[in-house]
Length: 63
Image (cartoon, rainbow, N blue to C red):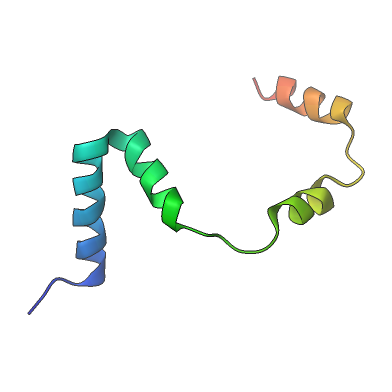
């Protein structure tokens, strides 16, 4: 019997990390992950009505 999908995924991830490091492995995966939807339009909707000042204030409060 062959490996199950979770085992294949884990072994593959470990091989990528070994060869490329965490950052390189992540970049490699991102080359093949297309995602969904329209990022630009989604961001416009999410940020609609939020000012730059409000964003700055929230970022500074979380530090």
